[in-house]
Length: 212
Length: 212
Image: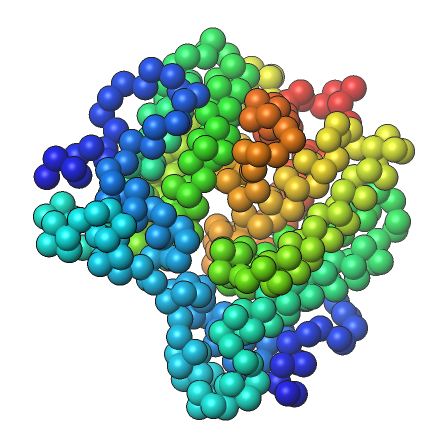
C-alpha cells in the first residue's frame, strides 16, 4: 500500500516554519476536504473515492474502511505537527524562553496554514473508534507535555511564573488551536504579525515576564 | 408555535452562575444531542423527530426546516450565554477587574456546563446559511466586544496591561470555549477549582497584574 505509507512523516523537517506541503495523498486530501465541510458521518466512502479520482475498489486497496481513512489523516496531521515542533525545539538556543517561542511559533503556524487538518482532528474525536481515539489523545498529550516541560524549566530557573504548569501548557496549546478558527490569510495583518501578537499572549499564559 | 418561542430567553436571569436548566424545547434538545454526536449533515429531520417523540409533520409544525432547527438551537445557546454574561457584569462592582472576573467566570461556567450546546454552535458554523451565519457572528462579536470594553477600561485605569485589546479579548473568550473540549465533571478538581485556575489564566491574558 504505497499510498498509505506516504501519509506518515518519515522525511526530515528542513524548515519547521514551512507547512506549505501538506504531505497528504490524494485520498487523504479529498477526505480532509469532505470531513471538514460536511463532517465524517455525512461523508461516504464513494464521495471520498470520487473526489480523489479513484474507484471505490481502488480506494479500498489503500484503506480498509472510512475509519481507517480518518485514522491515516489524523496520524498524518499529528505526525507532521509533532515532527515540526520537535525540529523547532531542536533549533532553539535551549533556554526556556527560546524553546517556548520556537515551539509555540511552530504550533501557531501549523494551525494558521493547516486549518482544515486541525479542524478535522479536533472536531472528529467524536467519530474515532477507541483505538484511534486513544492514539490521538496520546499524540495530543505528547504535544502538551513538550510545552509543560518547557514551562517547568522556565519556572525552575525563574524565567516564567506559572502556578499550574499543566493548565498553562494546555491553555497555550488551546490558544494555537483557536487560531485555526479565525485566522484569515487575506486579513490586514501579515502572518508574521499574527504570530508575534499571539506569541505575546502565549508568553503571558506561561507567566512571562514574571510579575514583580 | 409555542414550542419555538420557548427557545428564546425572555425570562430574567436570577442566578448568572446557574446553567443547570438548558432552556431548550424537547425538539431542540434532541437536535443538540444528534448534531453534537453525528454532525448536522448526518442528522435527518426524521431522526430529530424520533428522538423528540414527535411525528415528522409534528416537527414541521414548529420548525420549517433542519436549518431552522439549527438556527433556533444556536440562537437559544447564544441568547442564554449573552443574558447570563450581562447579568454577571451587572452583578459586579463596576471596576475593570470586577467586571472581568464576573464575565469570564460566567463564560467558563457556561462552557463547562453546556458543552454540547457550545460544541454545536462553534463546529456547525460550516453548516449555517448566510443569514444564520451572519447572525451568529454578530452574537459572538457582541460577546467579545463586551470583554474588549472591560479590558480597555482596565488598560485606561492601569489595572491591565494589554497592547492589543481585541486580541486579548478573543484569546480570553477562546480560553473559555476550549474548556468545553476537556472539562470532565467527574475529574479530581471541583468546578470551582477549575474556574479559579482558568480565571487566573484569563487575567494573565488581559495583563493582570500589569508587569512592573
